[in-house]
Image (cartoon, rainbow, N blue to C red; front, side, top):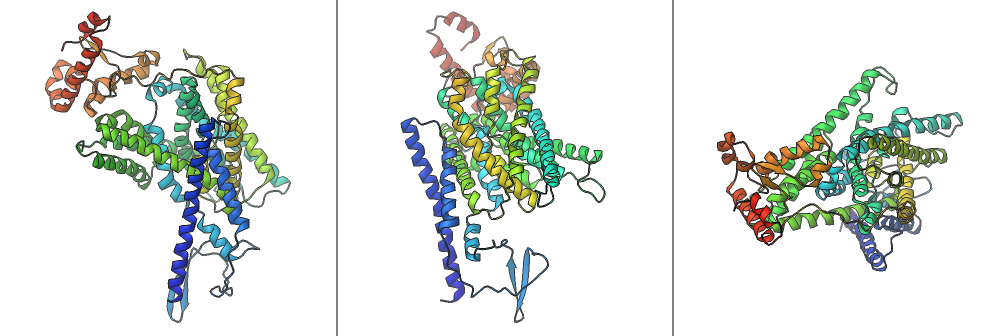
Length: 588
């Protein structure tokens, strides 16, 4: 065999070995999770465990394995002034293309660097393959009742809070960076826009460890909803905010000077990208309907592909896939899910739960490994100290002032103990890591990435591990009935009671603010009957004058499902002491 065939076979063997390492990491993590659950160990979450295993493998790859040097194919005589991305080499009249892999670390051989490069994934892998199932699952598994009951507070924390946190962190870091310049501790350019970008990426919270413990202990549902809702939405806000900061381009030679028009343009980009991504996600979520109920496998496959394509479509259109796929998942959970066959409903839930679990643990394992496999780390003690101070103050500036303002109008006040837990639970995770690793070309971005890794490690291990003592210290009630989504049957219908055309709804609506009550009525009277087969048909909710249009838009299946539900209700409640009252509501 020729030399090229041997090299290709050797490369294939090495790639298989490196992928096997990650599979073994996940396998070891799963087995340890089982042991922890069996022993009821709660001081360390699975994500923190995955990071520890990743760190151990990274140490072994970096310091324990040495690839023998082979300099026969290495030519050291070529010298250029800059490192081109692609190099065309003329060898005896034939041109060969070579691509840039990276800088060789001083003191190590190029084979060792090649090994570390192979276990370092392209950042686009995280955005296009690993992040979509995590974000989609967050929207698809959302407990909508508690989410919408606290929608005003969640939006305040996610939007206003993230922006406040971004600018507080950015300003504090700019002060530290300026001090580093004075004392000569800065080895490259670091502008105010870089500080704001750092503030945006570390403002994305991911309290997966805390929420897992909350769910297991059945912590107060409002506290869970506030934390989960904030983490779901502020990931979307953080990625759009970071993109807007990158797009900041003032006129003139100095691209980092302050200019009002450039700020307004960045603000317009933020609003435009977020709105466009939101609209695209909702639109594709509404359009993702199937008539393949007789073939659940095909139905599930189509649902999966349509959901994933939402992310890619948004990215291809210049929007943000994270925002689009999040709202696509929320829309599909609210509308499309009701049209799926029972088999597909179970399959889609389990499929995305599995993908979320594997992707999340893979990312946290990779974080640990990257601490040693990434070859361009820039660790600066002053910057690291400033970052920890900044994220603490940024989180405080988010939670406490907004909670005070929200409590002025909330019926159920956000107590000081809840606020302290929310402050403590501001962990950083997958989104922060993915945003920081996406661009590590400059000195500033390399320093941000290295510091971000340390922030994620600290918050997951210390804050995540301290959740149980924190709950006890703050006297947070546990064992609370989660009061799951109202349902009266396997049809997954919300409690809807009709009397003479007037809608009576459950307590969720009554507890919500007036904008949500208006939306609730509109959704249940018009959108759900139009887009799903659940609930009453349009003929029962639209005015009598719109009867022909309602009959045209109502499918025969909607009539069948509604009739079946009414019969079920009659059979279940006819023996109830309130059966007389029940018969006054329904006529079957």
